[in-house]
Length: 571
Image 1 (cartoon, rainbow, N blue to C red):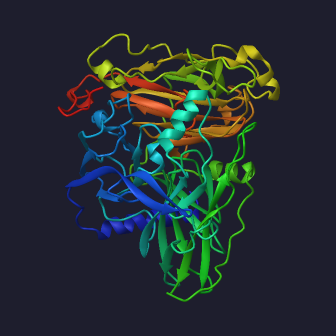
Image 2 (image 1 turned 90 degrees about the horizontal axis):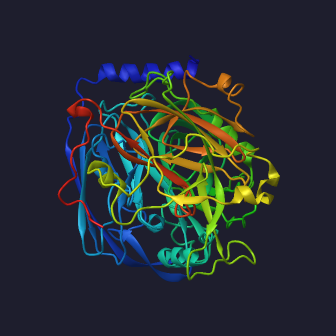
Image 3 (image 1 turned 90 degrees about the vertical axis):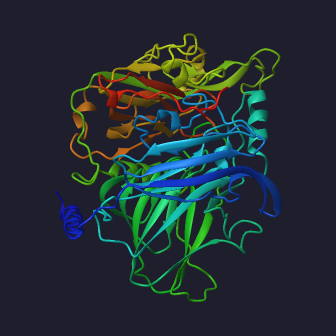
C-alpha cells in the first residue's frame, strides 16, 4: 500500500470514528416533467425536449440507503424512458429504464413512477433518457452521499457537478429517423457544452459561460459527468492539477494528473486545490477521437471559467489540450486507475470464473430492408451500416420488453443463443479486414446470454478493424465490474491473462475498450433480471452494438425478482 493511499484510508477511518451516528434512510421524491421548451443557443432558437425546462436537468441528491421515487410525466410529443445510469437496481429491475429491455416507453401524455433503493453505492452517477437520441437534452446528475457522512479522503470545501454534453442545431429525433432511413449513423454534433453552455469559443455564447467561483487555498470536489452522445472528452483546467478519487461511483487510489478523459457514460470525482495565482482560468473539454475511416468531429473546445476570489477578469488562461487523436494520453489515464482497497463498498476480484466469453465488437453491414435505399456503402443501395457483438447485431423488440418476456415466460421475443466466442476466428486487428467481404456481414436478431444467479462472468471485449477500429465504451446495466486487464492488438489468452490485476483493478460500469485492442472485465451476476450490455456511443446502439444478460432468480425470496409495478408502461 502506497503512502498516499494509506493516508487517504487513515483519514477516512478517523472520520468514521469521529462520526457518532449515520444518516437514517429517507424517501426522496421528485417529479420530472418531460416537455418541449424553446432555448437560444449558437445564435438560434431551438425547440428541445428537457426535464422541468432545464439543460442539464435537475440534480438529484440522495444518501446511500435512501429510496428514490421519481414521477415521470411525459408531456413531450415523443416516447421516453429514464435510465439511472450505474444504479444497481437490486430487485428493482423494472425501474432500470432502457426502452424495450426492462419496460416499454412512456407514451406522450402518460406517466410512470420509478421507485428504487440506493444499495451499497456512493459517489457520482447520473440519469438520462434511454429512448432514441433524447439523452442529448434529457439528462442530469445523480449524487449519492455516503451514509457515514464522510469520505475516504479529506473533506472538500465545496462540491460542484460538471456535466459535459453535446449540442445539435436540429431536432435529434428527426436526425436519427433520417439517418435510419438511409442506413447511416447520425451527424456529428455542432458544439460541446459544460453545464449546458458551449462557452467563449462558440458564436453567441460569450454572455453565459459556466463560471465556477472559488476561494484561494481551498480544495473542491468536481463531480464530472460525460453526458455526450457520441464523443469521448478530455478535460483540463489551465495551470491546475487534479487528484482523481473515484470513477463511476467507485473509489480509486488517488491519482494525480493535469488531464482526465471520459467516455460517454463515465463519471469522475476529482479534487481540485486552488493553489495558483488568483485570477481566471479556463476549464475546457475537447474531443478524443479514435475512429478509423470516419469523418472527424467538431474540434472546437467547450469552455467554462474558474474565477478566484470574485476577482474581475479580462482574459482567462487557456489550457493546452491533447490532440484530437491522442490515444497515448487517453490510454495512460484509463489504464493508470486502480481501486482503493478497503474503501466503502469495495469488493475483491472474483477468482473462480463460471462463464468465460470473448466478444468481438465493431461495425458491419446488414440488408437495407424492403422499400429502402441506403447510402452506407457507395454504389450498393441494398446495404446499411450496422454494428455487432460476435457477429450478432442486436434487434430491439417492439411488442414487449425483454424483462416482461423473461418474467412471464413469453416465447418468441428473444433467444438465448448469444455466442460465448466469435463464430469466426480471424486476425481481429488486421488493417485489411475491411477488404474481406466474408467479415462484413452481421446477422440481425435478439440474442441474449442467460446465466445462473451468482455466476462469475469474465468478458474479454475485442475491438476489430472491420470498417475501422474505434474505442468503444461498453456499459453494463445492473452491475459494476472489475477491469482486470486491457491492451492493444489481439487478446492473447495465455500471455495476457498472466498480466491481469487481481488485487486492485479499477471498478467501473463502463469500460472504454482501447482502439484496436481489448479489455477484460469480471462481475458477479447477483442481480436477477434482464440487463443490457451496449456501446454507450449512441450512434452505435440502434445499429446493433448490444446484447443482454438474463440473470436467473436465486434460491431465496431475497434473490428473486418481484412482479412489475402496476403502472409499468405497456407497448
